[in-house]
Amino acid sequence: MNGGEVFATGPIETKADRGWATAAFYGGLLVALAVLPLFFGSPYMMHILILCLIYIIAGESLRTVTISGQFPMAHAAFMGIGAYVAGLLSKWLGWHVWITIPAASLASTAIGVLIGFPFARLRALYYAMGSLFFGIGVMNIISAFGHYTGGYAGLMGIPPIFIGAKQPYYYLLLALTLLSTLALYRFEFSRIGINLKAIAQSHLVASSVGINEGFYRVFVLGFGSFFAGLAGACYAHYNMVISPTSFNFMATLWLMMYVLVGGIDSFAGPIVGTLILFLIPEIFRDLKYYSPYLSAAILLIIVYVMPKGIVSLPSLIENRHRAQKNKKASGVV
Amino acid sequence: MDQVIPAICNVLVLSSMYILAALGFAFLFNMLGILNFSHGAVYMIGGYVGYLLIVTFGVYKWLALPLATIAIAFLGVFFEKYCFRRFVGDFNGIVMICVAITVILQTTVNIMLGAKSLALPPFAEGILAFGPVSISHERIVTFAIGAFLLVLVIWFVNWTRWGMQMQAIAQNIEGASLQGININRISALASAVGCGLAAVAGCLMGAFKGLGPFMGDFMLVKTLMLVILAGLGSLTGIFLAGLVIGGLNAVLPLFMSGGSSEATAVTIVVVLLLIRPRGFFGHEA
Image (cartoon, rainbow over all chains, first blue to last red; front, side):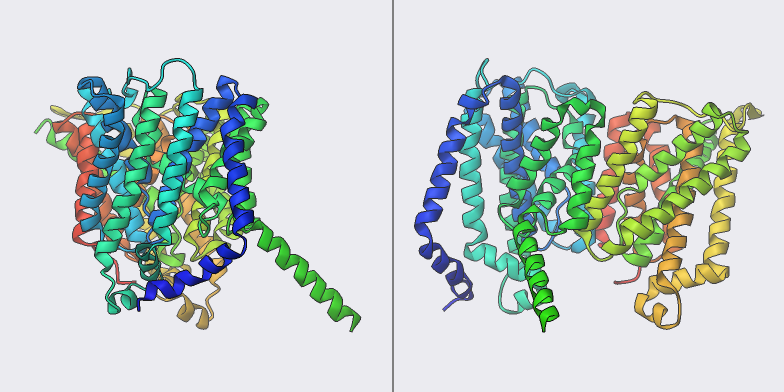
């Protein structure tokens, strides 16, 4: 009946085939994540893991926006909007944390939708650049109201969610990350996600079969910025200090790096990429000032050896293996 | 009147520096469609090479400027050959390689010279006074060098063989290569010229405003605004957009505080981009 179901049948069959294995894998992963604080319970390790979870939400939502074929470069700014809305509401109006986080996400969504309408005119590089300038402008506006937002020095004294220990933050963010990734996964393989992929392949063909390009692009930007705002609000309440430099365009570029290192074509990409780019520099913490070289080296290895990201590594090895086999076979004959 | 002439002077100085820094970015963007996000870092390293030559090695300052330019031009050839060429048409690859280059250059500067702000010695000292109006020689020299180089670039692009080949590649890359133009050589040349110009801008701005490892980020944003406002494939557009951006940056701080003037300038650029999604002077591509 509709185009969506034709595409959706493929993955559903394979899922049914290995349902048991998949369920066991995800169950084991969940248990492992839940008991992780028992083994790596030091506050520093917890801090790194919490930041990883926050950036996994942000990176995954960035990837979801890119399935429409446009690369938004304002995603850190949407995180910033969420962080500043949550921080300002809780600091100046004294709102409760459980209200400020949803309010911040909704504010980020609202701005995403509002900005989505005029930006639906822009495509490809010009969309990327327009959203980049939008992100810079938002951060400049936030800095300009220094009386309320603390300006370039940052907003200090945001009330925390939990006082003292870091374990509750870990469990809260683990739950939020699981819910967000589940929502984003369901979104990507829903009818809307398939329409968005059609728009990415050819916006002309997509509009000729009745897909409203503008509506879906605005929709996905709003949907993505909801989770970016959620990540930003959690960051604000966790860190208690936020400054515009955490959300400027270099932050957007790093958020893109988390997605691209993992692999933008795969849903697991941003998760893998964030873990790699956060944890590998932590393992070599003794390098101190030299540790940015390590991140740069990771980027160079990815871009020259596996341009599709780390997720593509197994298929890359398999292809090389097969090519060697073929070579050997042809050599014998 | 006391305010107007220094303001015009500021507009001219800032615009010429922005245009110098943006030209290298614009060459690669027009010819190969690459967004070179590491251009800000190249501009920064140009200033630091000038600083090393003048302050650390004690080279005469008017000799150090061309030496730094040539060194960064070779760096530009290296980047084009080993980094940008293989990622033409691959936005994700280009962003990754440019972030890697930026991180490497910034970290190197940070380790060698520290994150503190440094300043190149001024290229000219003294003040030129006309009655109530006074302009420092530094600004005049900066603008003079900038204007001379821009005229040189106009001559290079429009009247030399290599410049015309660059224009041909910008118009149609396949057609140009069918006419026997060596695309790789010309794009390496364009990258060298562009990086050299960015290095000159880095040295002059380093004497004018001081050096810092992250000064490139600011200039990269200005460069992007300038090139995107100008549109694809227009040199005149770059000059006019440079005057607009330089004018906004020089005039707005007279009326409002630092943060809000930046915000206003960016807002104006976003609105202009939404009015003309493909820039003001570019061709449709």
